[in-house]
Image 1 (cartoon, rainbow, N blue to C red):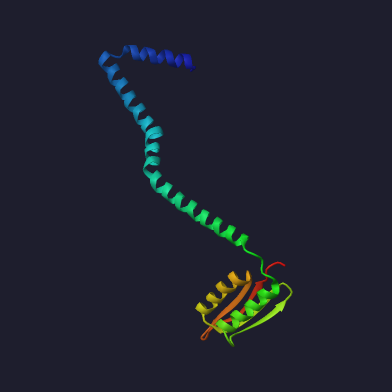
Image 2: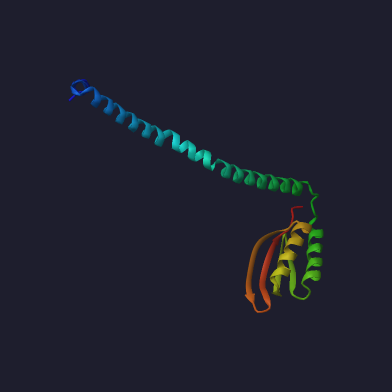
Length: 162
């Protein structure tokens, strides 16, 4: 059956309907089209409008976080470089100050290995924060095990470039 034949048969069926039946079929078709329009166009748009304020607030928080990180990165880039010997002296001083007798430092080229014995977690975290800012070192490797006295193991630090 071709499209022309189908349309012709639909026209015949339509012409056989009484006026009241035609109106009811037209009304049913209008209801179906309205439902289709609602489900395909209006409902999704209303859903977006409902969730937009929450999503915008989340995006604003993410943007603020990214701007804060960018400002921190610019501040870090603007700081003067620390010579390696000064960085090593700062590391040694911080070890003696924060962890006397619990850590040993050994240097090999552009890396420093700190061997820890019974270091409390808070003490280690404070020391790492201090030396990261003051010496501009970065942690390359950490091998730590928990013991009754605290943390045992080693931390390998990368010294700043010369």
